[in-house]
Length: 291
Image 1 (spheres, rainbow, N blue to C red):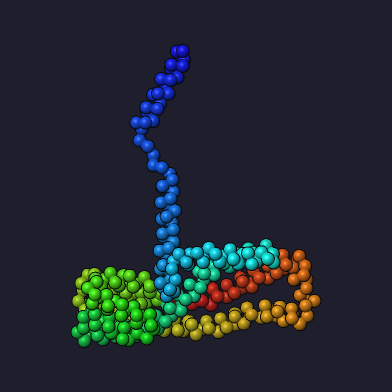
Image 2 (cartoon, one colour):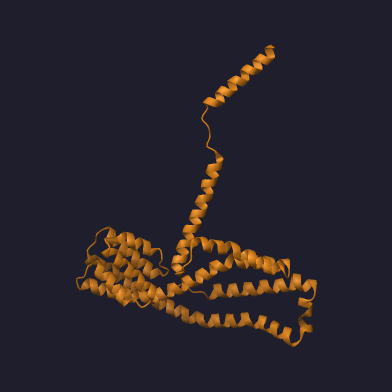
């Protein structure tokens, strides 16, 4: 009885200590909050990428495509062989991101062509004694690319709607794919936040205009030199698959070891697809010139 009583007393004392001790947070809500944070950051990053590419697509839809594309291409590749399923999975993982980056590059090049023109118009309007809304209006008039024009018109509209210019500029700055226009928006944000006079804006934007024209000359020279290399790389990338299709149509017996045998379907064909994919990717990376 004494042993049972001592055990009961120890159990009661332990229960009392546990009841009085501070409790740790439940790991469930913490894990759920961490997952929600990761998803929120991914959606925010996708929103910025889609805005720069000027794609009217919801971030959740874009993330869903990034998940669905590898599954669909992997399932299609599995019809032929497991290695092709793996290749389809890899291409599916990369294809949506590559497409958005391609569109972003197109927008960046178009914005780069407009940047010197926009800066020159803003500097001229500032030198003529205009105020910040006049600078935005001059930039919208000088711009030729529709999105550059639309962005400056939006800034002007928000200004007349009594919204703080710096806040509107910060939001529109996130859509800029071109480096030169991004620098223009950064300069305008700093100038409007610090309430600098338009004369100071003319000096800053004038310096940016010289840098933008210099960058444009370098970018055009680099693009001209790389264009020939890309044409050669594209031609070589199409020759081998075209030759294979020609042999398939003209004389099936020549390509039968690749299509009609297990070794061909599971080894030769996947290796050829991987080499073709790697060659295209390497050629694109070597000849790619950043604007």
